[in-house]
Length: 110
Image: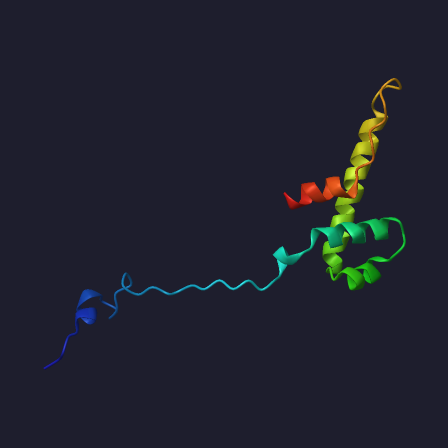
C-alpha cells in the first residue's frame, strides 16, 4: 500500500509552490554611499587647477578614478553650458558666472 503525504496530494509535482518561499538577503557589494563630499570637492579643485593629476588625486583623497573622472566631466559640462548661454545674451546683460564646484556637487548629490 502506498503512503500519500499531504504535500504529494496537493500538487501533481509533489510539492506546493505557495508554501515554499525563498528568503532573499540583499548585501551591498559596493561602498557607493561612503563618498566624502568635501574630498570630492577638494580633488576636483586640485585637478582643475592642474595641481594634481586624476591618478594622484584619487590616491590622495581615496576616491575611485572613475568617480572622480565622472564628477570632473559633469563640472566641465555645466561650465560649457553656462558659457554658451552667456554668449547668447546681449552685450548689455552681465555675463553668467562660472559654476563653482559646490554648485555642481549640490546637483550631483541630489
